Image (cartoon, rainbow, N blue to C red; front, side, top):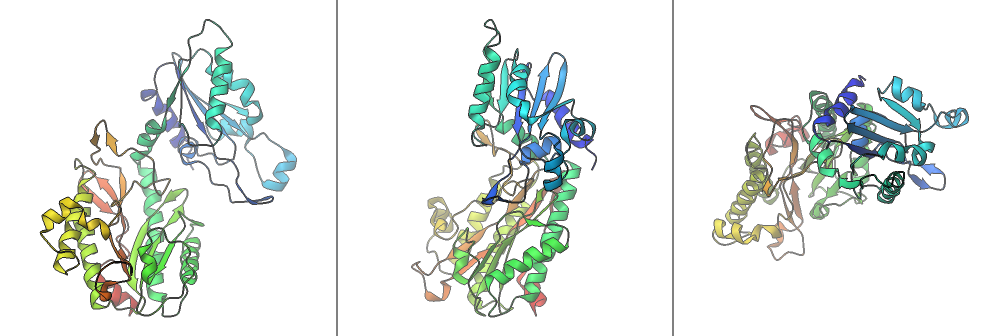
Length: 431
């Protein structure tokens, strides 16, 4: 890996940070599952974005003053015994030599050294409220820095969440290549599942298949807990129990994507366990597919990011009227929000290092417009639980379809089109 990518990102902060300020980005800590058994370590996304460094309990300080931009990192110290048990540590020397930081210290010295770094600066920026206990640490460090000289200006604390998030929002070519790979792996896993699912399978078996397909293609972890929802379970938006047996009459909704080299994919497909949609399932499915295709067409530079949402709402409202699940004028029904009984979530979110990635959705008082390098999901759905007051033939049908869309200068690119969404193609694949 060429670590100049991360160094360049740190240097680019010169144009974003206030003069005479320090940006602090904390890394993640090791998390324990139980007793002394730890979860696999996963670095904080913003920390990784600016460092490429994957050791726990580290801290970045980026100083912007009259001397220019300077990056400092605090890392776990070299420790021969701990390295025997837990593996290599870069230490301060490695952080400078291999990760191209200007200075590095071991993390046992943070409380001693960081107040000296902050002293004389007017502003400290960090992502407020994002890491438990870190807010108080920043207050303590700035208090200690201010006490070094009674004539110093007070140090203002500023939330850096939007600054870093909006920097991450526009993906560079390196990031796009990794997300494209994550999408390809995830799409191939969905294809294998469509080919393999059968009556009597348990949702957990399908989940294990996805994780296996991810792993054998080079993605060890899913990007989020997969949703493997058969039948009416699909009407629970964040269903993750994944432990029920499938019936041949069920639709199976699978929301699953891998994480590849820290970057996420996010794909949802809904397909019939029997390999063939029923008439009612197909009618609902086609409405959702029409909504998705129309929404994707509106993802292009300069368009308001809420345009796909509104388009999907109108297509779904009209479709529900056409099959009799809503009654009345589609335009008036849309204005009243009648569709929300069936389609109650937003159409998408940013995608990147996190599956629900960093970045604002507004600019000032207005919704943001799409810009090249943004990646958004598009994921409309219709959910009809057995508790709803509808004809029995519709009950228990839940459909969501989701693709990952890159905004380009010429329009957009569907990064997950490899896995079929057309119902005829799905049935052909499953036959």
